[in-house]
Amino acid sequence: MSRASNLLFAIICYAVFFATFLYLVAFVGNLPVPRTVDAPASSLPPVTAAVIDVALIALFGLQHSIMARPAFKRAWTRIVPPAAERSVYVLFASIALLVMFWFWQPIGKMVWQVGPDDRWLSSILWLLFWAGFGIVLVTTFLINHFELFGLEQAWLNLRGKEAAAPELRQPLFYRWVAHPLYAGFFLAFWATPHMTVGHLLLALGLSVYMLVAIRYEEHDLTNMFGDEYRRYRSGVGMLVPRFRRRSA
Image 1 (cartoon, rainbow, N blue to C red):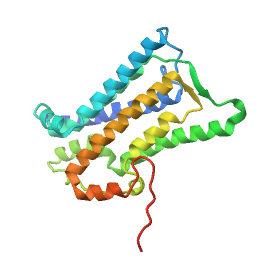
Image 2 (image 1 turned 120 degrees about the vertical axis):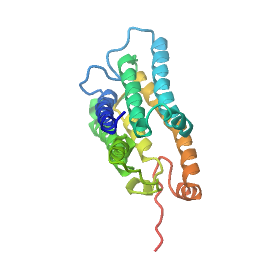
Image 3 (image 1 turned 45 degrees about the vertical axis):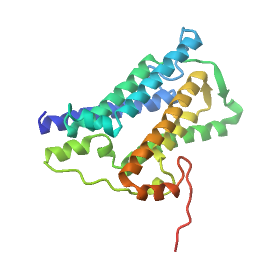
Image 4 (image 1 turned 60 degrees about the horizontal axis):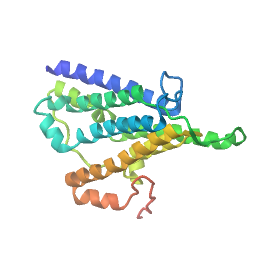
């Protein structure tokens, strides 16, 4: 793969990701798209629908976790160019999400529903929903949005330059919480005025995946930064902010 074609591939993968992310917002929020988490209930028995949905969540979780592991990356870059490795990961993650959207089996039984007399509560939940996805988007830029989704690697490769060594930084949210990206997703998945069994299954499944992913991610960061990361991690919350008193 030439350097120019590698950059073009990275741009295409990024475009696929961005469209998939926007669809994820609509899918979870039941916005006007062809299929959402609470689309008309499946004709399948609820147990069968739940088994399919859990399998779809597991497929996404396995893809996301396995391809993110350093050992897998070392083996994978013997097949794909190192400059394209992140873009391939982003593409596969997008495909896993698209498969989940397409084959999701809604289960419409209501778990909770905010009534018309509690519009203030409904408004708060919608605010938390949008805040969650907003935190996710802002956090990607705090940790280098273009590197996270493979564009920077392809651009540096085109210019014949090497990426800078990773450094442990604490911009904005990271001053108080170690995993703001996951915290944002927790808000977005759980904050809804209309929680169906299908939505609850999605929120539970992805929450379990994120808690597992955090453990692996912290293990990798400890291996990379050592005591520097341990000191940082001891002073901030995992998902809930821990506000530290600054020294004079």
